Every structure is written in C-alpha cells, then in structure tokens.
Image 1: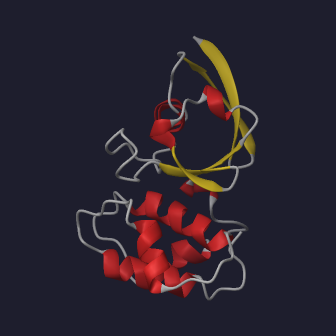
Image 2: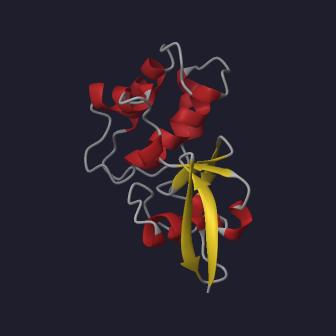
Image 3: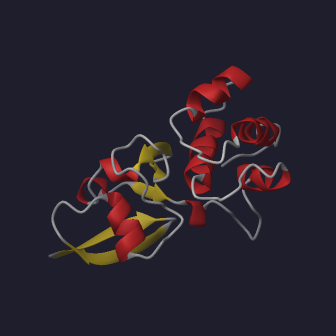
Length: 156
C-alpha cells in the first residue's frame, strides 16, 4: 500500500492504494466518486470514461499510478460555477437517458468530442459514441443531445 495523490477535478485527492489499482478503482472505490461506473472492466462499454489531460479515457484500462502528474476530470467536476456543462444540460433536455448507468461515461465522451472544436455531424457523433453501450437503447436521443450541445458557445 502506498499513498497516491492525483489532481481530480482540479483538486489534489489522495488515497492509500495497492500497486496496480486502476484509475477506475481509485476514483470509484477509494474516493467514492460514483459517477465513474464499473461496467465491463475491459474498456469496451465506456461506463468508466473520464478525461485524462482533456482526452476521453477508459479509466478501467490505466493504472492510477500512471496518471501521476496528469489532470483527471470526472462527471462530478464537469459543471462549473453552479451551471451544468452544455452536454449535461442537453442530456436532460433531450431525456437522453433511461436507467442512467451509461450516462456519465457518454457525457464525458461527448464533452471531450466537443472540446476538440472540429465540426460535428451526426455520423461523427455516432462514430465517437459507438464505443459506449446503452442497454436502454437511447442512442438517437443521445446523438440529438450531443449535436444540440455543440451549438453552445463554450464547451470547456
């Protein structure tokens, strides 16, 4: 066991972890940040998606130690100044969720997609979101929400 401190949502967060602990375990189990969900633990479902230095990353596929010196952002830290991020608001407005299990990972993927500032098309959104599993079948509403959020002036 060793103490690891990472920058999570702009704040230093520490936990006494075992060697080999994944970033998912660090966030969910040690820091009790339950927005980062454990789905497949193989990097294929997307439920554990967070931002690592601004890029969408499957937190089950990287050790917490490998994230030292990097910025980790979770769905809990996406809102700013008491206002939801444009993607979070769009998911609510378009009711782009049903059970909500996949929603945090999809929101984080979509927020990273919007931050790259490249033009969005429905096909591009579908391509980026296809690595996320939604068992409720909300894909069409999710795509609508992401395209709507892209119209907002600021996505950071």
